[in-house]
Image 1: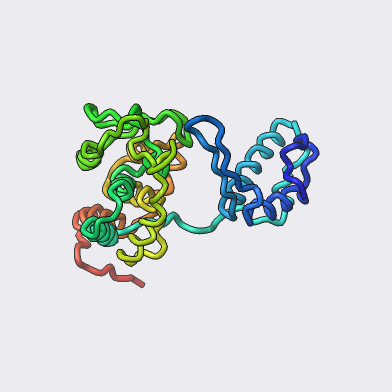
Image 2 (image 1 turned 60 degrees about the vertical axis):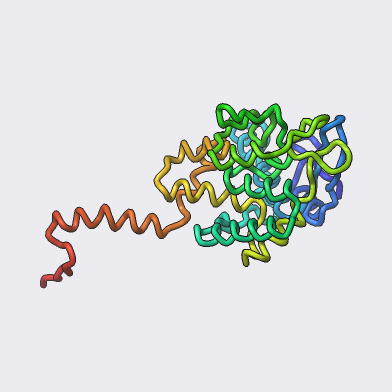
Length: 282
């Protein structure tokens, strides 16, 4: 079954959607193509990618139905899984501490300094994996403590840098001849060795489910649970849509419960119910 990309909007049916998912899930659409001297397009496919594209395509068709451009949404009729039904994975502060201890241990063992710096910046900035791994010097403003990213998932994006993140970037050697902060050992691309390091990190920290994207979710959930506004948290993470940040309002319930107890405790005291049980009257 060919991918439906060469079909007109009204020609795509449920079978096309199902065939598309069958092709993308095992990685049949994967490619690694160099499109410019310093730019590659890397598409890996996979089940997660298939579900994301299906969700996006369903939204497009729903819009087209409302505008009466098509009669129906073929995604709704397709027998495909449209959601992950999983919460975003994040780390507790105790788990973050284990992550830091793993970084320190690997530094002591002489692990690659670029890989360690990249991984630490993931944790400190909440940036996506390649927003740090493929970071360029012209996107770094250490004087103002900013990353000015020219091409992200949501377009141009300005991200704040903490003092700890600035300190890490200040220690990185600016190698002449490369525009990348973390250039590869060979060739003209950025450093590609974080996968091997991350496998060791999560083993040493006993975090088997952690991925390079987990620190991003951790920063978001920690910010919101600590009382930061969703808008500010979204700015830190580079979200263009407030709904993307809203997922963090539902995680790390322990701080939320403590906050509710603080607020409710004041009201209970005013109601003369502090430490007392209400009695049911007949």
